[in-house]
Length: 434
Image: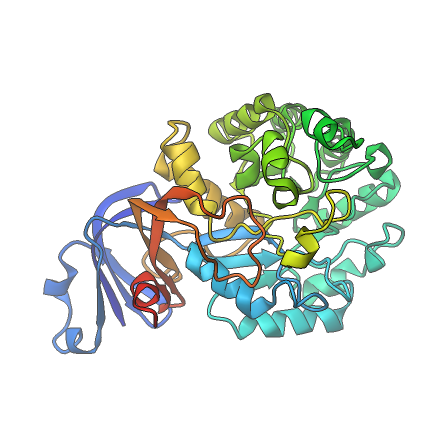
């Protein structure tokens, strides 16, 4: 049992905000109220761990629906256990894995393996399955069977779907399944060198880079198909102002369409790729300041529903290669909330409740997960965070450390992460070296 006392609770789903106590029994929240210590039955306190939370934010456990834990196949970068540790340290109690593993999650056996590995971690680990066999973009997987076996949704993230007929069929099938289809929108035929924006960054390196049109063309095509089919479609890691506007228009037309913003896309521009090189190389690439501002406006007005990290670990050796050879992607689970607080809340763009909605209830709702909210009878998944404290990112729980944010001082420190009614991360223990 846990008793969290006098924390400043913000629950975006209900709108509840203020100082409250939370009493947890087993894996559910039993009571939310004030001065609960005085109302508990005799003997309860003796068997209850008490977490003082005065001066701390108490919020639902964060939900990230776009992470890569690299297992099976690439465990030198990350595995499901180390990824879950990084998630807990960042305040995430639920994550949804992408399916571009080796072998990919295009069959029941691999799906079962990933789910089994996830169940052995202290957080909730869900996984998508692939849209196409082998991520080849030619033949759809048995989506109905994979859904029945526990897939959370469908994506070929990392490999854009180029056949519009196949995309339409996939949308029709996910609509019947009432599941999301998440799309990586970059037309490879337009890209000379991925991960670096065609503009000032590509000019600096003397390469062709990745033009904004690569994203815009596929977003435009797929939002049109989503409107025609009625499918639930999620546009992943939006990077251009044009894509934000296309999504806004599709929503205004009544489409069941959604969009992600990654913290690096609302924080950095292509100049970061010049400064940090491969550590700031990602797909889609960092764009221009006007794009960054458009993404922030999209978050503010609800066009972009959720913040997702696209946590993408790579080894130091891989990232030390030439700019055209190094893989794209950065880690993000441990820096996501501090970047949101520092850039969006402290920057005056979002309130704390608005930020939390993008990182809890909204992503949970997209994937139909029982997560991302605080309520009596609800899951005992929550965080205690000091939103005023500063921290320097000089080490990570992730197996990899490929990020331009290493060494940054950011506002917001997760003090405690509770998942399933158990403390799965404690900053105090970390600071003591336990």
